[in-house]
Image 1: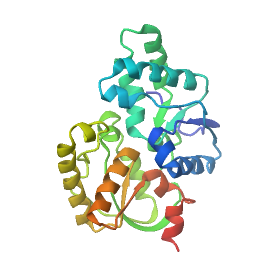
Image 2: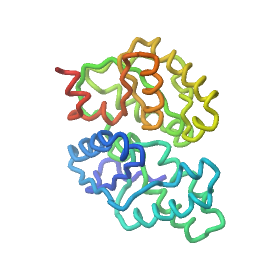
Image 3: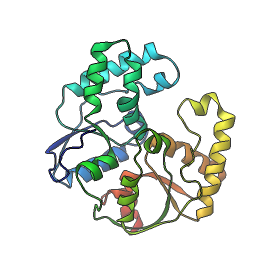
Image 4: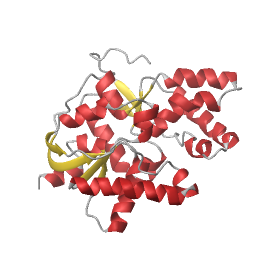
Length: 259
């Protein structure tokens, strides 16, 4: 897709905040806003946005997912400029799976293809569009990093978050064995196949704990909630955070690390 001129900062972006961030992790959305506004970019939040339709689509209910996705098109077509989202799975839904969802619906398919050229995952936007690899953040945290499935496999975004983390002053990133392996969340998968999901989660958490890191960084709120819940049930004192919080100099996470 066309990422535009990396040397020219967009004056305005639109934030697609996602359902999980809206309901469970608004601090993640605020960190995205803080980071973009600190670069002089106006952040617009379309108030009528809802779900992109991913939960119904992934569960096989395409007829239910389609009107939700159509509403997403309506809301964001009325905006101008890039759409930034702190979720690889939601961006993958719009960019990769709307084409499948709207197959046989030519008008909506064309609209979906056009909108897919405007939507970016958060770290992808920072690095590939803004051309920034160093957000000039300093912290005092030792962490490890989980490479979320949709970000890595559906969007092929890997170097962008890694390069941003490398340039955080004071951050120690400890290598994790099999950090590219799924945490077992997968949305509806964790409910429909809970035994398999739990086994995958346990392997992931074994590898997290083995690093000795106090913080686990990831890029999707669903994965974060899944892993944080598993760690709490184990009694492990490991905090799971979204990468936007780590990269936001004004976040509670970074303020607490310096106190």
